[in-house]
Image (cartoon, rainbow, N blue to C red; front, side, top):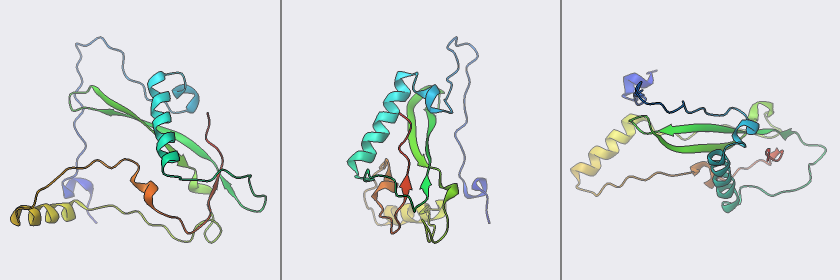
Amino acid sequence: MQISLQRGITKPKQILNLLTHTPPNITPTTYNQASKAAHWRQAMTDEFNALLKQNTWSLIPAPSNKPILGCKWTYKTKLLPNGQVDRYKARLVALGYNQQFGVNYTETFSPVAKMETIRVLLMVAVNRKWPIHQLDVSNAFLHGDLDDDIYMRQPPG
C-alpha cells in the first residue's frame, strides 16, 4: 500500500501573509455557527438546491419499523494558492455510523481514481493527440441509485 505522497498526491502549500490585517477565516463546525454568516447560508442553499434538482429524496412520514439516520452539515473554506478565499462549500451528509448491514445497506463502494490511472489516460490522450478538457463535477455522487431504502431526518434549517 502506498501513501498519497508516494503516489504524487500532495496538498497545496498554505501561504500565510503576516502583513495583512484581515481576521482569520473561521470555518464553522455547527449549523448554528454557519447560519449566522450570509456566505455560509448561501453555500447551504446551493447544496440544498443541487440535492432538490437531482431528486435525491422523497419527503415521507418516518416509518416506525425502520432505522432513521441523522444528518449534519459539513463546511469547508476553499482557498486559492495565494491564501485568499476561493469559495465556501457546504455539504449535507448522512450520519451513516448507525447503519446496520442487511437492514439499510448491503455493500459499500467508493469510486476513486488512482493517480496512476489518470497519468496513463493522459499519456494515451497525448500520444493519440486527443483533445483534453478539464471538468469540475459538483455533487457527482448524486447521480447514483441506491438499491436500499435509506431514511434520514430532515437537516437543520
